[in-house]
Image (tube, rainbow, N blue to C red; front, top):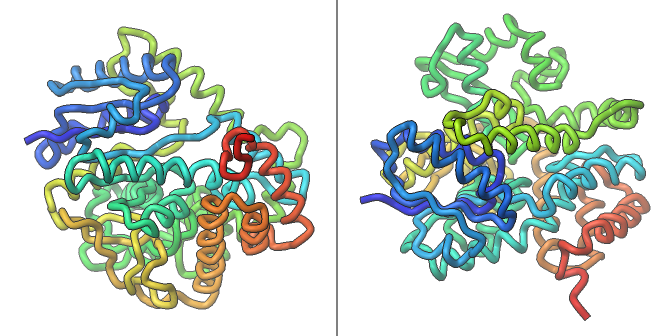
Length: 427
């Protein structure tokens, strides 16, 4: 029996990545209705058209629906995939540039920019989750790919929703390490991937029960340094491969100087240009495959990760995937209800985190610090309180100073006024 999948933010240029993966897992997940929900009709028409052509080319015979009506999209849905971006790339550009005036770098998931995105995103995602609980299929799942994934998933699970968070980083690492190992398939590499979303370390990478990570670090140090953004000397010191996002912590001052340098282009500006190019290609009625330019959009292997997760939830296959879930004792030193990003066994009842080795102090301290910030970010997003925003910024390791946090809070709130009805209720 087929399922209904609703994609919130279906007009995203990511969507062809997602739909391309549907056919790869047809044996475990038969989707017979795919609904793309988006308020932007122009994007929806372009993305919906190319998505259907890709699926038809691959022999899929289901129904593709595009809509601006959340109820029509979610009603009876088995999976609700959330990949929205409140405010679009314009809001992201603000997230990436406004902090520079206060001595902080800009980024869409970490630091003050990440908090601004959370303030815009968390209340809306919770509304969608409530609609899913009320009108979705029995035991429907919310699959969150919307950044900041850790904070959004924390909010979802705090409210008791049937949800799993998803990031593409672990899958990307599996593929890159498999490449360096001479073409080892990603599923053959077992990662000890642990931490919080965009704050993780790979502590081992085993093939056939043998940890190959020390060998990889020795043989491919320059490549791993380039891809992670972390100096190879630090990688060796840690004995682990940090995710790319950790370079914002390990090299904060260098990142700030790079962003302040003349000629620097924020990622939001780059992506805006790329999206315009992609949408133009999507409107070509002859296009029925993913364009090569999509690989530069970000979110590599998102389709593979997302569809694989949903297939396992649907089929109850019990395979191991890296996802964002409640800790439930998996990572020592964190509460059970803290959302972590770790390998989990995925079946029809959900994703069950696997026990991890205790983190060394240099990792444990940063994880605990950032988790405290994430909890405060959820509180701030739901409270509509300026003071709660200041507290979250003070707790953020990439801000931390009170005068800066207070000034940033005021500017971030004002810049996002039209997206924050809890902070600025209509008179």
